[in-house]
Amino acid sequence: MPAMPTLSSTKDLLIQFLQRLGAGEAPENIKPRLRQILLQTSPLEIAHLESELMREKHPRQDLLRLYGLQVELFEEMYAR
Image (tube, rainbow, N blue to C red):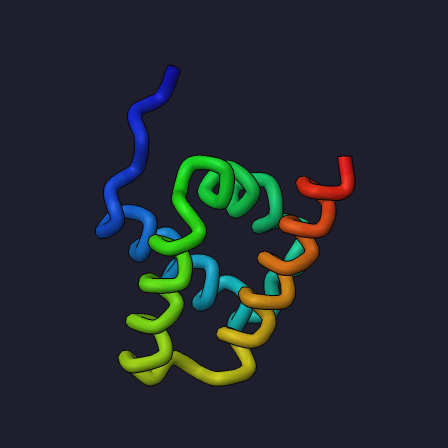
């Protein structure tokens, strides 16, 4: 079983996802890895990381795309 990611490494991955979305990459390319992160990270930790990303002034549109993707994944995961 792979090691659980640290908050720092999870944040770094979220920043990479923001950059990829901002560069025009299709959300479907990011979804599988983001799903793994969401399954391995508590909702409180995700909320904390999202707050940090907002404070760091990442582009609003990129944040909204990432959050929309997270909502899609949560809906898929909990619809089962």
